[in-house]
Length: 257
Length: 245
Image (cartoon, rainbow over all chains, first blue to last red; front, top):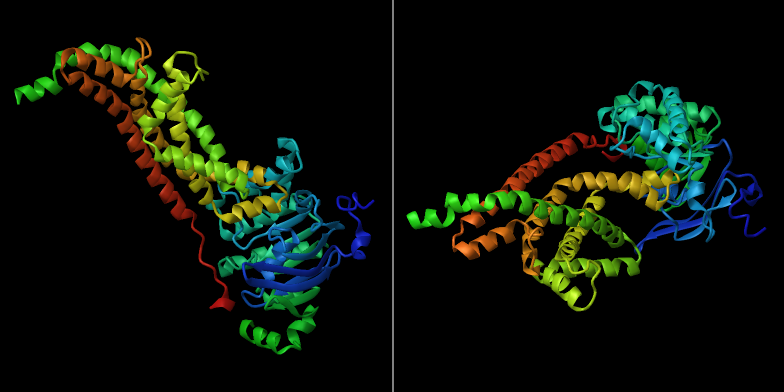
């Protein structure tokens, strides 16, 4: 049992939580960016992580799918302990979608292939089936007209929505958003936020690192405020954002709102 | 002045060698250069992956190889491989010098290609690797499908430059003693010059080399310009994050 539990989802590991982080620490050289972060995220919960630059929020997000392996601590996603020595990290990652600040679309292939590529390589789908799913996913996000264009030929907002489609095509159980609207021109932000809202309402488990306080207030079930590598305050979105308890969060909110 | 023209531009001398240059020399020069370049690309790509590896056991041998073969004069490597190996009873290509010639030029080319590929792959934004890995693709899948294709595109001009050098270096294999039918451009001209004491044959061979290398040079420049323009239009718009203003 001990050997199979690493591969097979075992939700009892986390008392039903979709994501469980326990005492996550991460250092780059002598600088400790995460100083012991623990966080449970329930299925279908939408958690927004806010905080000043350099507070470790993006690093924490990238720890969840091990793009940044933590220096120590335990990560359990969908019942699989990713920090176990023999965990199948690639398989686990395919169930965790990620959207990046700079979109990170693949510039050398068209939009359709951007979405279909992981389906053929990771899920070993036949090309035709992968393209059918990619097309469907793109049409759902109203990007059907763009499938034969290259990323460089569409707007930033469209690129980010393609990136969301690319992640959704893998049918993830969790979606991670790393400042998904920070690199967009102001007029393009709303389109991306709308897609994220819709996704939240559809019941997707989401962890969203964001500077969009309006989005956090409206969509998040919970807001986590990070400061200097630790969770400084967290709670129900409306309460945390309107009546912050810690002086640091009060100061932070007075600067961004 | 007459002596100068007679020595370098004697039309009669040139016409004497041109047919052999075109039917035998050009063919063999291209055979050696193309085969060596292809082999160099394959070995170079493997070396580049080793250079980029985090494992010391892969990185160190590749580094050693690249440093040695980039640091040696081409003529020395060609002598070591073409004269040395058969003398040491290592004869994968029998007694024909062509195989050794291709191998020698390929080994040199591989060292340069390795560095070209490495820099090309490293020039690809780290976000591409992160995006591939976040979708569940393995390191090698992400390299093969996403990073390497972009990296190679960035270094196509540099690789073509290396091919031009392969063409020129293929002339050095003359010292392996080529027989009739195997002779490349330089060796044919060299033999004719030794007979007639007239350098016009060498000029004729030079013209043949230039017919290949000059168009390639212009191709490289055009390519380079296009890539640089393409990159400019791909540039990201600056972030508009109010909280950081």
